[in-house]
Image (cartoon, rainbow over all chains, first blue to last red):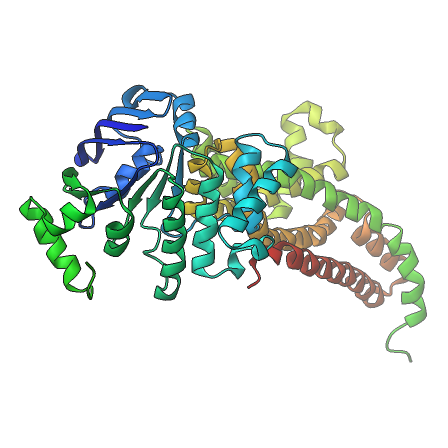
Length: 250
Length: 224
């Protein structure tokens, strides 16, 4: 279980996250939506300390952290309990697809190389890229790179996989295969916290949709309720704008 | 009348080649030491270590800002007047020292640029899976920085091989010093210096060939 309590993050004194409370049950799929610059990505980045939060408490499985007093060891422990999927894939350019997935197991979990590679091959199988094991990122399509990025996150066996707009920098032709893989993970009840603009994905896959604006959680609920009967005017306004351009999104 | 005395030139080649090991040894020692020093300086610059960063910038500024020949004279003829223990220093050691300091200043900057040039998002990815800063540098950043830095570092190495010829001004009989002596004995200055020029040229071409092979290998991961 993930518990976020009163999380605060300021950039140059301006609050970007202004007291976020959120609980994520094991196996739950949560999609975070909201206008640009409202702290959605920052929320994910704070959970594994790519940004250092200014205040709040985090519970990540068996780990409890008061972020204001987080030691170096706490931060490493938090990162080992969260896996991150980046908007621009961020694969290690000097490593093959297989090595990208095995890297954390070898370096962080200290698995023997053979065991890590065996696990990485299983994951490549699951993400449908078994034939690309020895391909370097530069020779993979955007969609394939992002699937490897997701595979790398799967290998970590984290409490939660954090997806930071995983399809936003993909050419349209590659979006579907990445979303399909995420749906597959969802059916396996992988705990996921997903920031995305793919409203169809939120509608189909999320257990709960969280609407954020101005560093606050404005409203949250099951997608059927949030999309069909949003309570807050800001949610209604946002949904009206984003859904206007999407044919038959709901 | 012959334009060139080819027989003299051919006879000179084995004599000059016997001095080649010393030239290459000075260059190899200078390069090895300069690489170590340059990596240290580059890391100080990248991490902006307080105090050391300013000292490093001063070091780089001085050794890039003054001629190598002046630096060699400073070490070999100048410093021993100031520091008595340096009177023991021989020309070879002084040359290696000068080459090391001079070239490390240039190399530090290209290594720094190569480290900074590694895509920042890969750093975040490595941290996100729980790597420490040391693991991140060893496994992700430095291997990629190496690939970027190798072409320029090889150029400095080639430059350094040619710069060993300055050792002859410190009384070291290496390739250039030997040529000078031979020429003075035979009065065939043009033939002698043309021969040594060709010898340097061939060494550099061999290295350039090795450089291309190395780059092909390092670029393996980046071919589409």
